[in-house]
Length: 508
Image (cartoon, rainbow, N blue to C red; front, side, top):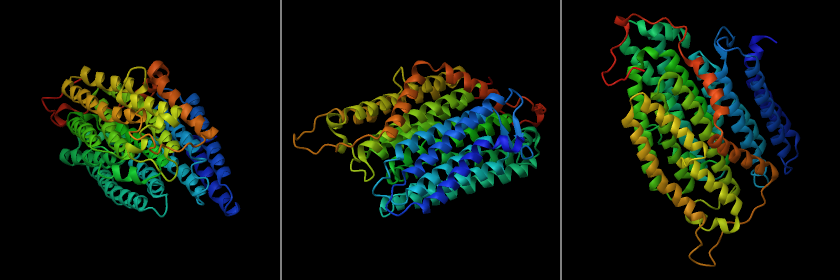
């Protein structure tokens, strides 16, 4: 097998799966179930995950697989995110099989769009050429723009899709300008060449502006404040399983690009970009948690929660390089498990029409849906960061790394925000187990949980619990992935060529 084929094997499988779903959909008579198309998408996602696992077995440490003139690089770092994205897509598809039964006649489009979106996300994580990253970003974005407005005929869905598209296009422009400025400062858009030339560039201000533009463009994708304004409205209008997918998988891909760009391409400017990262982290944590305190709509509450968690993850970027990459990767996986799980529970509780939206609608849910309410409570406790959950270790690694590198104030702000977050998470948890004021108050209707959805919920709960009890297995993988993002082959530029480092920066 050629390197070109091997390097893009997971993406090729997902692309072919999406095409097959599109070709098979018109062959199913109108009114018939589109569930077979969902099973086809699930099989394709499984095959893509196995392909990524196969890549992990054959890739050698320090000798990644390169393809297409060294624009694609398959290493432990990219494979980790391939496996993570495939896992997120798999549980989302399992939970969506019965979600679109009955009221939706265009479910086949949903399964194809999920496959195409996942293809773009994986492509982003394995690209080491910024223009290739942009291509993957666009493939992922176009799919999620459509998925956000998938519930046709509902005003909130149309608003979500349009707002996501307009603001996403605006953020894409920032990212493109950043790429252009990187080329102006270094003469290349390859991450390896940028790493070698950025520190010795004759236009350091242009280089700083390029880094800022790239961070702003990716900041939108991870919904970091102040680039978060789209998040509450889009989460509110999009279908619950789509929100679970778009709140985790595209963020994972964007954080992978950000890690590779900052730690591999711009280590010489660490003293400058780390200040920007700290500002974004503080704003995201504070704005996210304070905004969530004011919400009564559960999906908007979790939207502001995702903004806060983007801030917690950005705290990990302030650690020394290898610890930063390991902590960020672990937090991304832990957040994916608990957040996807929370939205899958909402999918089962509220259904396609989302009859339950506000905190009042979930009051007394445990009386009729005890298992689902217990699962949602468990995911909420993990989002808080209670011990023996993945959320606890994710925050522990992020904050301890920041403290060890001298960013004690940032860690204190993060811990204070975690305390604030307890209020709105526990408010939702209390609503689940509170008996309605009126004995005849309407409770959530009982719906049968399909076996695929039960498998997806069990998998997310097991992953959240496992990452809180036995995190070593995932830590071994992320620690193997961390050195790949470090500029080990980059020759350090002369000290006179480096931009001045602020006095507040602590050198690891």
